[in-house]
Amino acid sequence: MTNSDPKNDLLARREELLAVMKASVEGSRPVELDQTRVGRLSRMDALQGQAMAQETERRRNNELQRIDAALARVDTGDYGYCVTCGEEISSKRLALDPSTPLCIDCASG
Image (cartoon, rainbow, N blue to C red):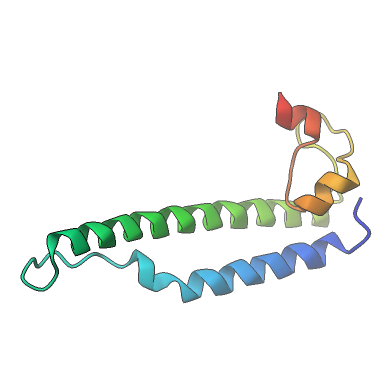
């Protein structure tokens, strides 16, 4: 297990993600399609930027789900144990990613 409190680490990361997501709503807004106001290349850049913002948001949502699942494991006393094999997850692995649900063997396989 990690030396610090995993629940506090997870909650802090969750709050950080939520703040970043709230601040980045602008990038996922629909792209203006009026060619008289925005040139074709500028619109293509905007579409690419929008796609990148949507992918980033998807990844953040995925991380939030992993954090919520890890917090549930903390509450049930299952935190720090692999959800697949039940073996203890190394403290170094948990220090790198406190939300990880798998030991290194199960993650590799």
